[in-house]
Length: 374
Ligand code: OSB
Ligand code: MG
Image 1 (tube, rainbow, N blue to C red):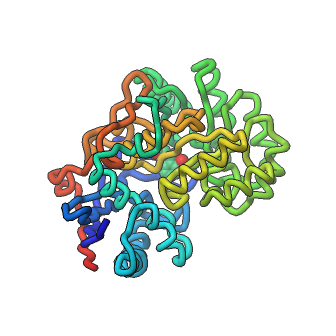
Image 2 (cartoon, protein in one colour):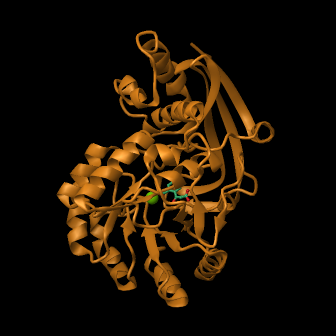
């Protein structure tokens, strides 16, 4: 594959309702989409990638403008230089970009765009590339922190009526036990889990222990990203399994977390770990260690959401992921919408990693565009 040039598209998409987590409220998503214009065996092939960095560096250190900057000034020049020595492929992007420290979401988006081009060129779906055999994956929904408990119950009821198979409640200190209890009491034995986005410390162990009463599937990222040892200490005090999200930035970190007992479950987000190929390695190592994994989400457009659904078809994804329909976040997606039907999302067998953004939608949502030439 030869990378001719790249167009970076910035799109600003309104959310159907505000999304509140322990680190803030979002009312729209600023997405950075990567259009890789390539030549494969003399044919022009376009591949698309989605960068899941958010507008502000509050979930992790990455943010959209920073991701764009590192792509333009550091990552793309390395890819252009590398292909003067030997042909590029999605499988070599990781090693070519390895000398740049950090920036996994920026790296992941470029790897995704090249993988998309490569798979389109060979007429292969991402699911077939991964060896996924299932044709659908169960669909869970991540529910933001609401203004009141009655409002939370209404929102959860709406998602259950639509068919979502698992509810994840965002929590933060002071908005945790009462909320979780209310949902458990009202909706009975619905599969339920909570996500703190690193909002607690080990000193809050007593509060987190009260969540043990609600038979949760897991508690996600209760403590700070760097607190692997504290997570291990906390896990010993809880009956609820501890799952890590923010802390797991690579396969090596996943192995450390499992070995230390910091987590028994891993949320796999391809962007957070540097790409779909590293995501698969984490799946493989967790499966070999007997740790369950599930696929997280970052408010992806139909592009990333479709790719996530294929990844989640791998056999180690034994827990329901945050793979909801496009309409959970967007009235209009930039691609064909991803549909949740009776609690399932189909695994695509179209060539490529995901559907191309529609030019008219890119135009309508577009707030910036940058051409990067070799
Ligand atoms: O922690 O899983 C998270 C969204 C943005 C940043 C972090 C998280 C989330 C979600 C949304 O929970 C999941 C989704 O995209 O459906
Ligand atoms: Mg999370």
